[in-house]
Image (tube, rainbow, N blue to C red; front, side, top):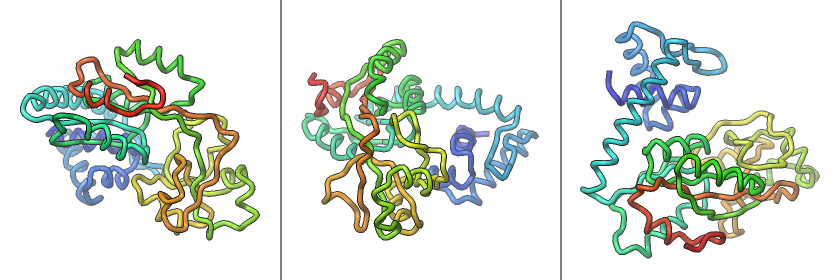
Length: 287
């Protein structure tokens, strides 16, 4: 058994699907299935139950994943701790935010020493907090409704994490106009309740959105817009973009009833990237 095999199992558990886990790991689905099967044969136990709704850990699998996560976290801390003196690397965990690349590039441009390598991984708020808190990332980006500001700040302080407030936005619906009738475009609630949502949406990221329990296609990466063009009556909860930033045939509809959500940059007290974090342009915190 190797640490890589443990990582494979943790990703399968996180995604609930061999196919989605393979995409995140940049592996083929057959190779990942074979790796899981080989590990289960080596251990002599089934780690996952294969069900129509996805991959569900068995009781023994839950124990393996819990203890395996501790091993992976320890290995990541060890690697991260000994890599830093050799080369100036940046490990970041973040929610999906299309404004991040340009903001990160601008912050790095003002540094005397540029990171020689960047590892940026997209995940949920909960996973970002876990990775930063466990020392698996130098910094993170989370997003919560602005009304929860005091609660989030208190939570971060309890975790011993530093933070800066970065960007406040209201969500929009991104959709492909040809896939919707003109009358549909004026009824946001109808779009959300009857349409097909692209990508899993964390409801804790936004407040006062209409019903978000409908059908959705779990998708990662910028190919979401390809799916919007190809999937009838689909939509995507997104950050607002400038007209010139919008992909071809994609439009946005503001969600007037939604609450503003705030992005938080978070980092541990021993992060080697304090200069980068404080060089980050923020409309809230100027430090």
